[in-house]
Image 1 (cartoon, rainbow, N blue to C red):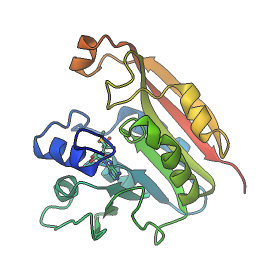
Image 2: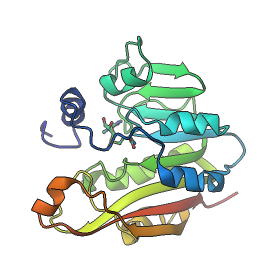
Image 3: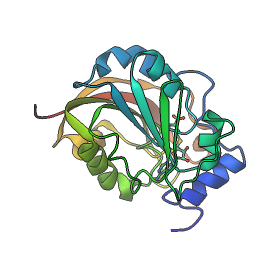
Image 4: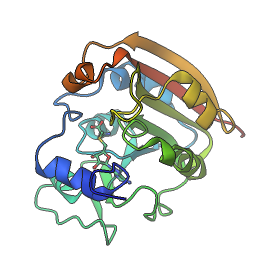
Amino acid sequence: MTHSDPASPEFWRRRWREGRCGWHKDDVNEKLRRYVGRLSPAPGRRVLVPLCGASLDLGFLADAGFEPVGVEVVEDAVARLFPGAEPDASAGTVHTRDGVTVVCGDFFACDLSPFAPFAAFYDRGALVAIPPRLREAYARRIEELVAKGARGLVVTVAYDGPADVGPPFSVPAAEIERLFGGAFEVEVLESVPDASMPGSFADHGVTNFSEGAYLLTRRGS
Ligand SMILES: C[S@@+](CC[C@H](N)C(=O)[O-])C[C@H]1O[C@@H](n2cnc3c(N)ncnc32)[C@H](O)[C@@H]1O
């Protein structure tokens, strides 16, 4: 695992340090706004937000009556959400303000048991951020953390082109079904061509860039 490998926290630390955070938006994700009503969770209101960055979506979820718990490995990102705090991923520090909680740590390894099982989850920019070889582990981790009946909103991108051009990596509908279809019912909410393709992607010959939204419901009761 090298610093040019998005499986490494150092890859992301450098991105945040250098301000190369094209994924970070100054507004709430439009698909979250559109589909937040579909997240109506299993009993409880706790929403897992893996690889949350410094996203405004956390505050939106809190304002909508949920209890978002984000997980983010880069201390600089967590500090953006909690000015004055001293996040430490190696210690798994927990930060809470205005109804938003963020655990600073590696999603694959940190202790989330005090918050599980989650009633819902929200993934925007998480599954598409990790290298394909980590996808199975990611899906199984989500599966073990959420309650039966829990719902998840997953927002991904998909495109044709070289497999190594990401992040964001292409995660088409068939991949969502392959990863989650065993434990979750998968509903395709939308898949639309998206004009906001990262600039460098065109140089790499990427075509057919689209953004998809999926509603996942954990099987069982
Ligand atoms: C593409 S960004 C998306 C952030 C956020 N979801 C959003 O929509 O703005 C991916 C984020 O995941 C974080 N990250 C990467 N690997 C991680 C891991 N193993 N555990 C926790 N956070 C991680 C990165 O630091 C980065 O902030």
